[in-house]
Length: 156
Image (cartoon, rainbow, N blue to C red; front, side, top):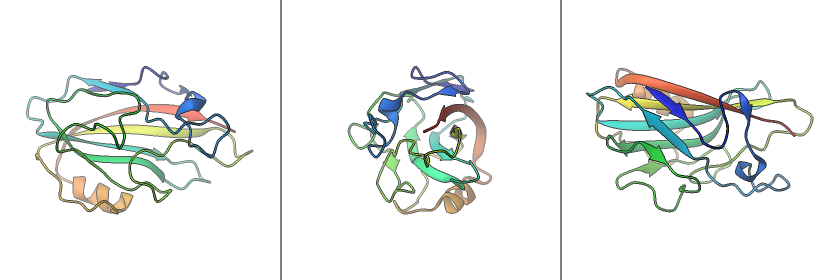
């Protein structure tokens, strides 16, 4: 399984328009994502974007569950708008529902934004919108058929 973004290539900079609105020029537009070759047994997908930088400490930028198995992309700016039917967005570390773009502290160096797509063997995860990253990861245990990652970099 592979995941990519038309906005950036792996381990390359994320354009500022996808940054949080607290960044000069940031429009907090969710990044476009496309994936291919999931396992045939996939019943749904889950998605996370997390900043593991030591300053950020696993800051959650986007958690999405219950993406139907026939979906192969999330277009730019889809968060909190026209998400696929049945899909559920959770709160990010900003306390906002849906996507929250990069906003690393000035001078803290380059931050990696790790996008992970999970192919799951269940159609639905029963999680509340305010589920933590730890609880999200725990719910995935034993249900993941495959994962795919792409990492974008952002620095202020």
